[in-house]
Amino acid sequence: MSLPADDTLDTALSRHGIELATEQISALDRYCRLLWDWNEKLNLTRHTDYEKFVSRDLVDSQVIARNLETGERVLDVGTGGGVPGVVLAVLREDLKVALCESVAKKARAVEQIVRELGMPLAVFHRRAEDLLPEKTFDTLVARAVAPLPKLLTWFEPHWGSFDRLLAIKGPQWVAERQDARDRNLLGSLQLRKLDTWPLPGTESESVLLEIRPK
Image (cartoon, rainbow, N blue to C red; front, side, top):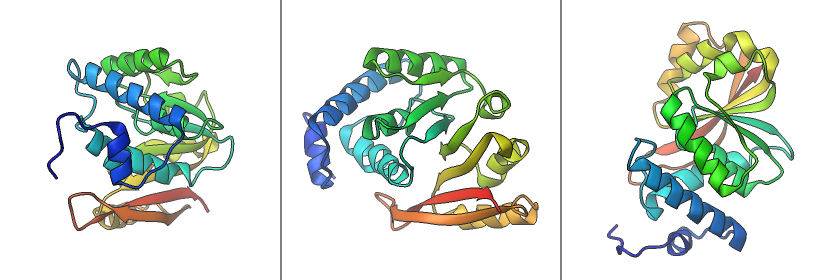
């Protein structure tokens, strides 16, 4: 798709048939500009135009948002530049969202972005598995963080600190699930596919997986 240099968030939203409140569009537009400005100094995102932001970051975040209950305490694991955590907080003001990032430079950048946006989001410069012994959450969300077996290994000792894990995966999720089964990482857990949607630019699809104790 060839896009004009002056493409806007409004036009990208229109192309995808997405309707948001005016204040949400304004907040997301400001977030994009802050993120892309930081991205010139740090590698925070590969999605550096409105089309990629809407078709990947926003659409993925919308899928997660519609699978969260009112008022949930959510931890965005490995937030990077703030997706999906910051976007979730814009879409759903009822959520209590926290962001976790183990890379110091990225954590400082997203903390500054959140501060400039005036959003009341906690940002932890920690590995999620080091944070969980101290904090509890309803749901962990993971997007482009690690293969499923690695995620399950990290969080295996900490299921008392959260209720479920929501993970966005691409077409490799079936192989990752089998790998997790072969390693006996799913024995006490149940895995469900909650949602699927097209992966832009491919013939594949993304999936939202829910993992929780049996």
